[in-house]
Image (cartoon, rainbow, N blue to C red; front, top):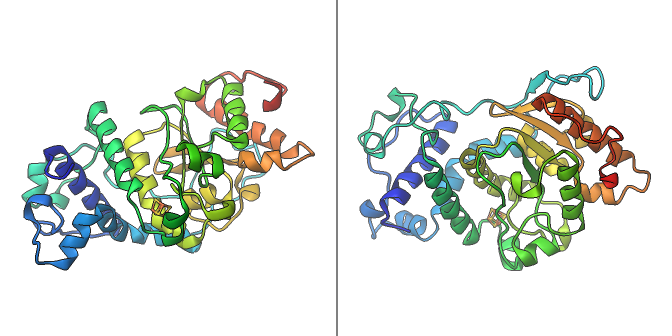
Length: 326
Ligand code: SF4
């Protein structure tokens, strides 16, 4: 894809958004990693050309460190789960200017970037976004940021679903089935997630599904903080391109990553939050539901989904609220 004009523009925009998220107010006119302007004698340029994701990863690490550090305050506690329907707890900062229009790549390259609030992916066409997502998925497939995961994965698992979905479900990381098939949530937990989605009145193919990590941790262990930090910039870019209208964080890893907190999902569930201006609900991971013989977690998950449906202004298909009965 290198040398392709669109790819050049996309890479530049992502780089700029990452810098902006760190508070950078000025960028040089000719970023060293631009294909047509690379200096082959510069080892940094050579490395970035071999793995474009390294540049984006370093640039976005400030955000990821905040995410992984767990020092950010968690949202104020609600009176009780389910009582704050319609009220949104803002736990993260909205994307600065990312939804406010976009300069042309030529304008960006001419400098003066941050004199305007119009540099964003917001005006990309759907075709542009599909193309950019495919490019991002390709970049992810070559990623080696986490040495152990790179060495043990069968393949990366990027995400599935349409652009502009009503809901994007975000899990932790691929499991064995997902690692083998290259699609998120296709094992037992995935089948339960599909039932939950259908209980909500959607088809699986109508929602977007992805994970914070794009590679399977060996033995399905919990991802490390560093692994989450490494992979979160990919999720950020994916989120920006997919543009879901609502988010559901499934389990501790996703909830903590999206809310920049160390609190567990048991405390976080039952309330509405925001991730960059998008309504967010945290609930249990379907794999945890499978390990809960009491059914309590299933009922609480359904309460969370009903809360989201009410927030969306949609009918609640099953008043009993048990996804297993769907
Ligand atoms: S988990 Fe993410 S950051 Fe780590 S190697 Fe896989 S794609 Fe790269």
